Amino acid sequence: MTVIRQEDFVQSIADALQYISYYHPPDFIQAMNQAYEKEQNPAAKDALAQILINSRLCAEGQRPVCQDTGIVTVFLKIGMAVVWETDSAISIADMVNEGVRLAYGHPDNILRASIVSDPIGQRINTQDNTPAVIHMELVPGATVTVDIAAKGGGSEAKAQLAMLNPSDNIVDWVLETVPKMGAGWCPPGILGIGVGGTAEKAMLLAKEACMESIDIQALITKGADNAAEALRLELYEKVNALGIGAQGLGGLTTVLDIKVKDYPTHAANKPVAIIPNCAATRHVHFSLDGEGPVSLEPPNVASWPKVTQRGAKDSRKVNLDCLTAEQVAQWKIGETLLLSGTLLTGRDAAHKKLVALFEQQLPLPAGLDFKNKLIYYVGPVAPVRDEVVGPAGPTTATRMDKFTDSMLQHSGLLGMIGKAERGPEGLAAIKKYRAVYLMAVGGAAYLVSKAIKSSRVVAFPELGMEAIHEFVVEDMPVTVAVDIHGESIHQQAPREWQRRIGNIPIVVK
Image (cartoon, rainbow, N blue to C red; front, side, top):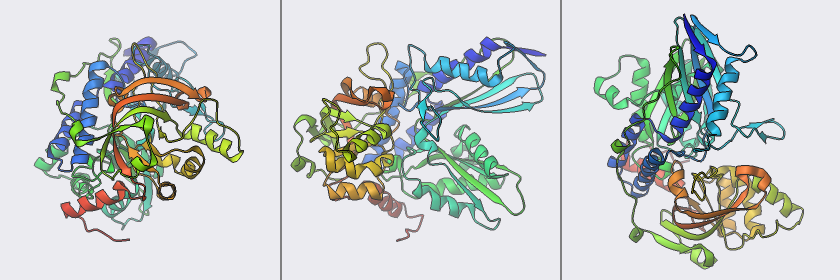
């Protein structure tokens, strides 16, 4: 009989979440470095460099690899011989959530609280990132096995499910679906694929698959022993041949691995789910046997590759404090800019408030002026110690598309900074008002924060991390993703690299 004490379990959950907030799994870093070494597209290679540099900085500074510190997902396998020593009124889920609460409020490494209650209605932030999503299974044995992940909203938003017919081809569906997912999931990462069971079981299988180790190169060497392994090999080659590349900029590596889990299903069905894991992959696995809380061994930071970004000689320096429409008109897609000066920030909630003010013809909050400025789509982590701001990487830009026309019409903005591509609505507004869209690298949030020299809240403080901030930045790297003519690198580059790779036919639509 194994006795698991409440305080040991809670502390283990908290310690694991702190650990994965700043340590990438070593297999992930190795695979990312292999992608960096072989990449031939300079823009994608620089994005991979930023991700690797960010990862090393986070491991050294013990700060989050991404400003989106995720929704906590926990898989528990509880041995039937385990006895719990707990308060009588507490459940296992309560203990998990207490661990989450401790982890996200840790004073030396505050993690961003992103969970909202009343999701249909008021969407109020719970302030401590609870509750977690918890899956429990009773199994033979006398241990508690914990698989825990912090899943970013951008990658989770790209999850897909299809109820295929038994005769339908899974590879065809995946190759049709992945390009539609865009780059908001921050490739390169892992695609977890679940096949079988029922609709909800396929999604669960896909989520579990995301938490497996990267071993595709070993599988390539060994060869497939079953249909699931054969599917992994075929999809790994063909998804990478789509040419989407790092951050959707075009290139040789879109996925670091394809993970597949399957389950028996009804004869009339073939449920298939995809859940991507992003460049901020965060998960760890451990067991408790009654001998106290888990002790997680820190990885050797010296093993992180030492890579560098493109130098200033390859980039255009931009003074944001004297920016003009004429300057913005000169920027070309794919060009790297180093931004210095004043930036304003804003995400979904702030945009909603701003557009409501425009529609009611009401003034903006005192001191808020967007004229000839850029807006950065970001919700930063709170600072600790001597930080100006915590990790402050971009959020997915397409969520702001429905606000873009109004913002550009009424605010005087010259452009926007975010993550991944813009959709048709956003592109149309950018072209209409001759604005630009710049892309910062998702998965490099701590590195981006190093370019922020001061930060203050200038509007909507009640929105917490979604408040409008004023940043003063120095040499913040971005890529011109959409120019004043509405031309998009995310539309052009993947098609070009798909043609160069030459393993997947290009279908003209």
